[in-house]
Image (cartoon, rainbow, N blue to C red; front, side):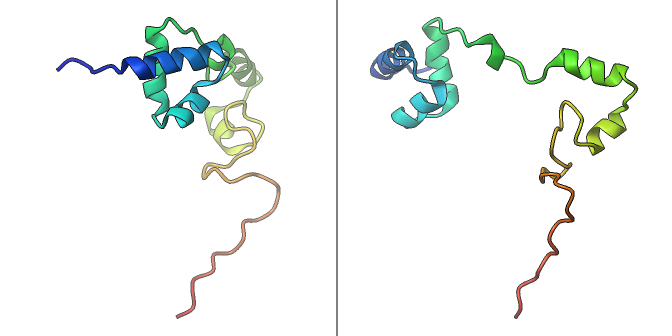
Length: 106
């Protein structure tokens, strides 16, 4: 089955991209998903800024491991370049113990 395209939406995406509006904001404005906007943007020849095209600074990651750190240590410390400031559960590391779990009283 061929993909359906919406010429009006494509034109609106082009207009908003030309105005400098970001993909997420275009998606919110048009009430569609970011991948939908990305589909139209790619068809229009849109090229993202390279600083948003990478997830990690791989040179920093390499320096971290070259300094003698291990994968195990990287996952458990806040100075890891890939997990800075969070624990495995995603909680912020601030030096305080997490609040105790309180079950609802019945």
